[in-house]
Image (tube, rainbow over all chains, first blue to last red; front, side, top):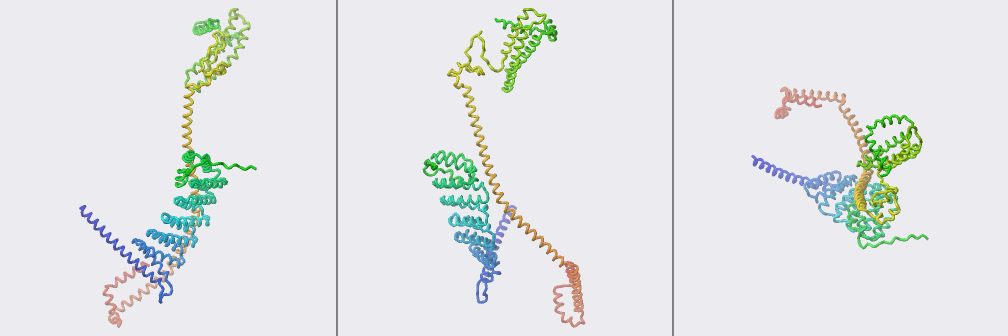
Length: 312
Length: 307
């Protein structure tokens, strides 16, 4: 009895498998047919003087969907591109942007990194065209995240473009995650000064939307990054600039920075390590910054002379 | 043995066997209402001394230090009050009283002195260096706590400022407890910092979400209003389509069609009509599908019901 049931199950599975294979073949045929027809409609000829995008676009979309389901990414990507073009011609940038994003995802699967960057940038531009800045920025961020491992410079450009878009639209609060991602990527690439600049920009954005907690954390993170990059003067200058703001000067982060600078002034590495290990503020920063802080001090630590005040 | 000691011992013995002294009992009853103020005051002071002594004994047996301190303070207060009564007693002792023998009169000042000594002897938690020359001044124990009785010699002694074992142990215990408290306070501070950080982040997140929710709220309100309008228009359209006038017209037309169809059917089935021949293929067509008159009428009725 059990053997019969098992055999039946196998048969059903085989049947299902055969059905799914047949279904796939059917989908491929449908997709190819749609693609052919759509290409025919969009090809100019003696009888057709204008491309029929209105009829071709749904066919392209159908073909793209079917190619995607049967896991033929190359064909699906082309179909999505054509569908996006069709939507643009029909003055529907929103749908076109969606199709471009889908094409970008497929390009990522195919490891065509340049195309990924292009598609996501185009999608972002289309979103901005229909007045939707947030989705435009999100598209850039998604694209940057997709290529940050293999094309970090392009990813950084996309991150900063997204930040700029949101800043221009007075939506700085939505850009905090982007700033964090950009600064982390810069730190990964050992570009510490650029990372510090991004952190200071984050602080500025936080100041604009009165997010004091994030602002103070960003400033402290920038100071730590400068110290890690062995540029004590830059760190001190950064601290002096930040301390001129009431919000930072009255915060716990300022006290932590003061202790750090005091230890650096005395030139004692043990003291610096003690300050960082016993601090209750540093563990609440971003994990990359904590990792940098735990490796302080970097380079040779010498006692820093306090510049005398000229009272003449 | 001095006179004072003798008097003290006699007092103790008399007190012990007081109940057998009928004269005293009667005299006590009389003297209380009598003119002997000295005796009256003496009795009261003696009773107070006894009460103070009992309190002092309770303080010595008590373990709770706070209670001990309170009792000792009360004893000291009582002693001070009693010491204030001694000059009064001395004055009264010098007064002449009727029916009193010369020996008794002479003994009264000694009684007052003995009473003063008794007051001094009540322990009140403070060891006072004995003033008096009869026993000579003893070398005071350097480990005893002394209050208001510091001799210059004691201060000059080198061992005076040294730490003892007890004080060292106390200091160590104090340092240990202080370190533990500091540890606990540090942990609390760290926890509070974490809470503050989390609260700050939550606050910022809420500030970020607020305009988004407002936007969603506005859009949903707009969509709801559009939907409402659409529903109203749809209802109007349906009402127009399903109005009674249209229904009557539909019914009349159906009846007409049926009438025409029925006439044609009956006319076509008659063999004398020329159209019979023309309609023969149609009839054959009909027959091929085996559509009877009854089935046709049923079909038409179903069509009417569905409308």
